[in-house]
Image (cartoon, helix red, strand yellow):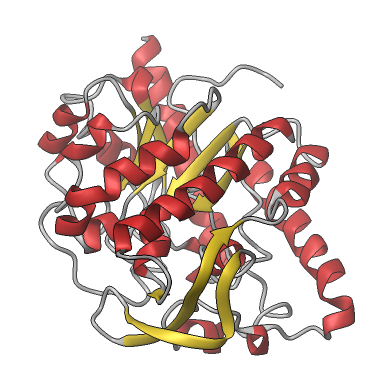
Length: 345
């Protein structure tokens, strides 16, 4: 594996799933599933794993051909970023789900916590091994965060939401350890609900996040976002919970800036963290030019030095048409090339 260049490029996690694999209109026409949504898959159950492997290979090759430096599995096997892991745990009932409000305020079926949350076996280790076997580039795997999972569940077992989050943290910690052992170079914890529920995040979210990262020695990231552009159309002017992440033990923080036009002064609060900088607008299928993307990256240079920036899209690339996703990845790679030449001059 070659060392990463300056301003490396990476997806946040997901990539556009092919239409032949999943019903994309049904996927986009609902809120992200928290329990299983097997009805979304177009392939017969006995052929689904093979089809998901084939689609994952396409996602890997698309990232390589676009010129990305850090490759994910595209989260191709997942119905959503969180339910793949959350529904694999013991102590939750997904067949008789509960209800919780989504970040938009709409009720959504969610796992019902009925007993102690435990991870009976690794959930994503086979996925990271598949990814490692099919690319020689730096690889990243994503897992849902303990705070977010505690917000996406109906708790009928633990005395409060904090206790549930700490139990989820133990499961996530074990998973992260196994993912690094299986060959992951970077593991990212997705915690979008820290932005959606900042008061609860301040009360115990950071404690749960650090518990999930306890003892981990590999490169870790935390992703926090405003919600999928395909579903949540309005963007606030700034993050409700971001400077607090300077106090977490992850080395990298993943944020969105393209659609929101975020004031990047907030980046100065992130101490010595590497910033995974979202600079691709996923609310618009039109492909940005490399020059436009480079301009969005340059906005950050006054607050974070280039050596601590990873170039990425905003999150939710799974909802883009594949042609658009491919073009936007090429624009990222082109922007990185432009900026590297500028920095070397």
